[in-house]
Each structure stands twice: as C-alpha cells, then as structure tokens.
Image 1: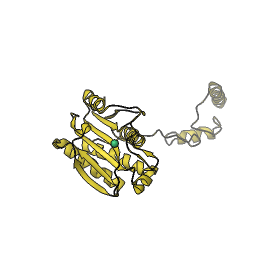
Image 2 (image 1 turned 30 degrees about the horizontal axis):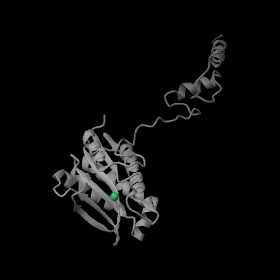
Image 3 (image 1 turned 45 degrees about the vertical axis):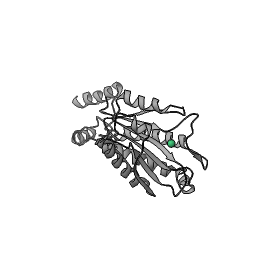
Image 4 (image 1 turned 135 degrees about the horizontal axis):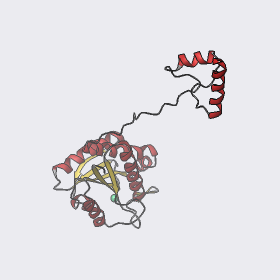
Length: 241
Ligand SMILES: [Zn+2]
C-alpha cells in the first residue's frame, strides 16, 4: 500500500465548463493536467497513490470533492484550475485565509516548483476563503494555471510543452513537499547474450572440443536438442574407440 495519498481535484466538469475563451474550456485543461499529474507522479516516485476527484468530464459539487478527500484520508489536496478575468495573465496559487503551517509550506513548495517549469508572470502566493482549501482537512492548495481569456496565455495553453510544464511543476512540487523517493530507473536489465560468442568461463573447453570435432564451432550459446546431443555423444564414442 502506498505510504502517501494525494488527492488531485480537476476543477469544474460536466455542465460547469469553468472559464471559457479563445476556444479553451477550463474543465478540459484541468482534467488533462490532473490525469498527467497522476500518471507521472505514480510512475516516477515510490510510495504514492494519486486519487482524482473526477477522471472524466462529469459535474461534481465542491462538497463532494472535499468529502472524497477527507473520507480517503488524503495527505494533501491540490485543486487544478485556469484563471480568467483579463489583465496580463500569469500563474498564481491560493491557500485558505487561515491556512495551517503545512498548507503554507505546500503552497510555497508547489508554487516555486511550478514557476520554475512554467516561467512567465508570477502573480504570487495568495490566500482566499475558497471552499476547496477551507473544507479539506489536509494541507490544500488551489493552482490557477494561466488565463484562458488572455491571448498570450491562451496561446501557451494550446501548446503541449506548456501543459507538460504545468504537469511537471505539480509533480516536482508534490514530490518535494512529501519527500518522495524516485523509483529506481537503473533496475538491472537482463542482458541479452550473443549466442555466437562463447562465455569466458567456457571458451577454452568450447574451443578444445570444437577442435576435436565434437561440435561444429557455431552458436556456442544456443540450447542443444536431444538429437543434437545424440550426434555429439556419437562423435565422442567414435573418438574414444
Ligand atoms: Zn476554476
């Protein structure tokens, strides 16, 4: 069982598209980013399980989302959104107005990790009386990943590399906050041997017996069948005679 449970909450969904502009739907971006966070966090780190409040385009009340996180006993909650409201655009995060020290630390770690990957305008680490960060019992942060109604941000949100940066930033920040260990990438890979080259420990014997004519000298690493064995035995018996 995984040591840490992370609840990722893709904002909006179903009949609630969130912010809509420039051909972008906030609910779709939030879901894409959230699914990416789950896939990459679980693949790259040990001892972590990512629960999603929704994994498809369905509508959920805010209460259903925090209830799920609280019931699951999640260690942290991150709610994924995109912004709207014009201006210059950029990235910002929210914690509850009277957030715990853990929430403040989670926000700081996550915010810096995402900015390091995403770049652009940093609108800062903010506090607001939002349901998702108020009603969750664990450290909780809401991220506002660029503005769908600011042309420059919308252009960025249409690029796969920018979505990747948002995903990677969240993964990095969550792993750093929880102190997750990377999965071992250098797992011993079974070396495919070259059957045409004798193993060093057998080389001398192989060459001596080949010289005597018991083997034809080819494919020293290949398995032998019973009929091939019979032929070898026959050659040995003739040699002994
Ligand atoms: Zn939203």
